Image 1 (cartoon, rainbow over the protein chains, first blue to last red):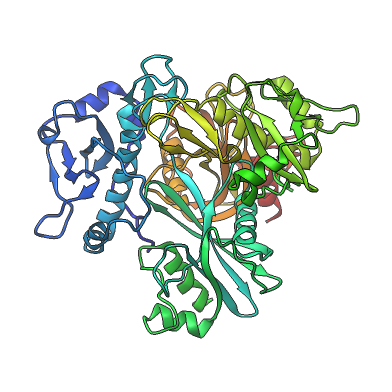
Image 2: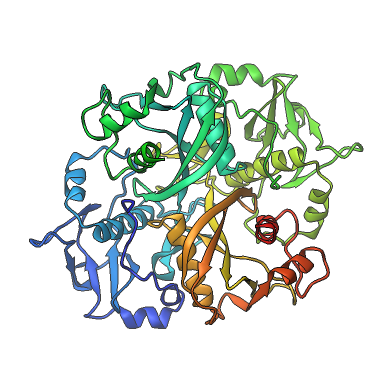
Length: 285
Length: 285
């Protein structure tokens, strides 16, 4: 299963939209996800820690995450969000490595939404104050009345194949020897397939065709939707964009297989990353 | 080909990121897309109208759309954006029906990005003034320095099949007899496949499995990425969410075929909509 998927929460959209019903769930039985800023907190049994709504600061905004076996689950918006890059916090990565898959998915979704609130306290349209609405799935401007919705940013991440070899790159600033699939945000005005072709050409100078979808996963740093694709190149000649990439190489199936097993020519992405899953898919294809 | 795809512009990311190079393109040879607010304007030959940068108001912010056969193409941010629903402007729809596919894609992408600027003049993080950066592919806060990026909102739109029939719905407020595929925004913390399953269950009460990707297209009202999928239901018993849907029905292949030909039990979505394409895909599958 792909990381950050498989949350056990029922998002219960009908509750968010109904203020009376939502208020009815905000009682002593409700659970509050324990967060230290945006960091998760774990019990001795290795599960996510939960408290009650009484644990939230008095003026905290509360997001309704959904229902877990009928119990309402909330998270409080922290004072500050975090738009730093995905791998920035080693302590977070070691905590996440110990979470069960359903807890990891729940934490990831909760992190994305509370972080969005923390970084969107003002109205982009008029600069006025905004306040949380619809159980945290909206913010409304107190000045101009505009409604704002949580962001989910689609990102394509792609396998590029030529003559049985796979294109993998090392981004600027990545550790020596670390390689992964190229990736980039889908821009306004393009399809997934167009985004894949543009991004590969920008970063590697290679034209691709026959783009197909493989799998998707959410990535909560801060709130991407990773869209994993496969494509074919007609040529392996590289023109590397040195403002983004340190290196790009072509690797054989055996080299990718060995690297995923920890004994190959490059350091493969960690299992949490969809690139890891895509590489496994490719060596077994 | 899917509508709003196939723009002939080279987005030329290397130009955006290089202020000197960008300035070099902002000369008398540059073309300015003629827009009346957010409406396109057409020549006598039925193509999009273009002017020069001299046609832009003196204080207008300019977005670099890309290169068209080496010529730099820009659009000016209008005074106001437009977050109204997709079908709100009949005059726009009749203009768009007359655009060539590559012009329609170019207009759609330009519309999404200038509309985003018009509705994001302030910093969501601190309320300060923001100004256009990187040729219009970023806004920077003049107060706190935060960077903001154009939004692209992923939306799943899905065929749900049961026993050879297709589930189609009529949203609240849609004209009598108009039916299309169910759709909804992908939320933070879910994959495409999870978003499809949640949305179908919320709106129809039906559980789906075996979600597969079919096709994608941008939808510039204001800036969605439509992700078209297919899924199977295990049951056809409906529990309709009456806060969103007026009706949901199951239609046979012959009924869908007849409706697409304009002679069936429902009014099918227009060719510009990915739902139209998905239905064609399904009847020929």
